Image (tube, rainbow, N blue to C red; front, side, top):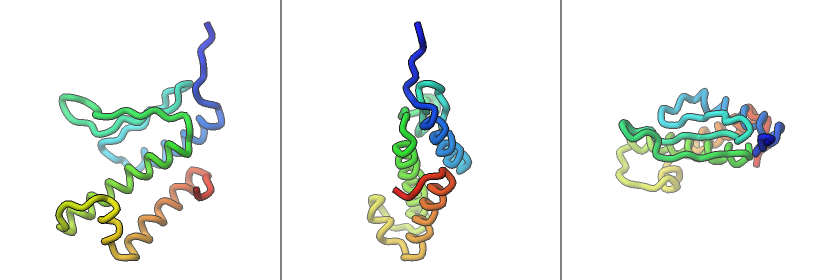
Length: 122
């Protein structure tokens, strides 16, 4: 029986670039694994002794990028919330509360990540 591929070679290469970008950021609770013909697996939110709380599988590099971008941005916003002592706010409210230069800095990171992954802005 022939093994079925769930991801194209082109998408696999694009996903490898996306994985390299976000893996280099060394987020402690997100692990990105190359699952070969099955695509890429993202393991999220490790807690001992239970392991990872969520698992996402990707065969589309754009969807993978968008997901990892949102996870990265949310983690940055949480860190900023902790230093600003604002109480409980949702991510959108935290972002809107930030000074314009900090908002621009975060969004420039997105453009940098897109460029590193050889994507046009989307």
